[in-house]
Amino acid sequence: MNWTELFQDAGLSEREARSVVILSTSKELKASELAKELGTNRLDAYNSLSRLTEIGLVSVTADRPMRFSCSSLPVLFKRLIKDQRERIDRTSQSFEKLMSGAKSDYDEDSKESSEDTNAKFAVLKGREHIHKKIANFADEAEERLILLLGRFGILHLCRSSGLDEVNSASKRGVVVTVLAQLDRRTVRFYDQLDESIEIRHTDEVNALGVLQDTNNVIQFLHVEENPVGRGREDAALVINSDVFSSSHSDFVSAIWNKAVDFQSAKKRFTEERIVDPLRLTVGKGSFLDQFREALQVSSDLPEKDTPFNPESYLASTRGFNQARAALQDGTVESLNQLGIDINTMLRQVGQRIGEELTFSLRKIEGHVEYLNELMDWWEHAGLGELDYDSDPFFHIIVRLAHPANSDSKEALPLWELDDGIIEGALMARYPEDGNVRIRREQIEDSEESTWRYTLIFIDEELDEESD
Image (cartoon, rainbow, N blue to C red):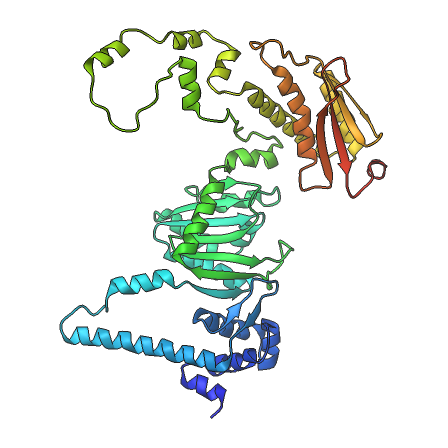
């Protein structure tokens, strides 16, 4: 008897047994390489590898393409024997309890605990097989289903049987939500989702995946670059783990709370306007402490319950807080006292205006041509003067028509908004992960408030782009 026959006696199929023997003599193999050794196709090899990874005999890397490996044959066979002995022991205990009149589910609590701590996963290869699994997830969902669709995931979903199952799940009461990165080429496909499904857009996620209820996840590992391709090389993991699912759910929730509702995001592509809600940073620090300071309430808060004192209670209610009354009629300085940073808020509003301005000028490819249009709009609006030069680096000089008035605490700092427009426009045109770095600095030797934005081009010359 050889190793292949021995593993077959232990419950593996002939192809699974041969796969283990081959992998044990190799460091790592791709599924295509194993298929060649087996004399079969890659799909059959993946089916065998999927079960072998599920029962813990084979390990898989998250590389592209994935690679498979296993321990030595004696170690694997001892593991199989151990698993079979544990299975026989559980069966024997269940049988004994059944015969003695006890429950036949052999300690359900112990079973659930074992399932919670032993994560299982399987490998899926090919878009068709992955979406069949997504359809199964939707069909079996009981409470909720979360879809991460990235840029082109909705296109793939609508071309599979998964779409009908997802819509059906939503109609029968399952809470279905979709977190996607909208694209003008695929935004129309979202209309095929049931109207009860909530959709949000975010630029932070381009991943594909599914979260079902509380313990099942499909995580895509590789997606074909061609969005309209057949996806034969697509690969995904099916993970059954409460711990992983919980972490995945927390990750999605954090992004979901910051994502934009579908109708607002859709306007970017259908009406070419940015109407997303603007979230502002109001301030920082403890607002309770700042409020107490504004009210001139200096007594410390008690750390535990204190006895009721009628005299103290009556004394505290005899008059209104005069500092609070003064805040009622206050201006900008009153907001500062409450910890509301009006400077930061106005700059963020300006940055949003600049982002929308750059969005309107997005079809202008050349750097100089874009800046000329930006300068024309800025000066036409009467916000100041812009100029640019290339010595020693390419930079933009900003002269505000309404400079900062640092001597007045009551004046509304609208100069923050004006300068924020330029800052926001440049940040939108040249994001941090691009090939242009932006540096903002104040020109100290200028007679009036003047800023300089230096643009450092890393991989290209400005002259070449503007030709």
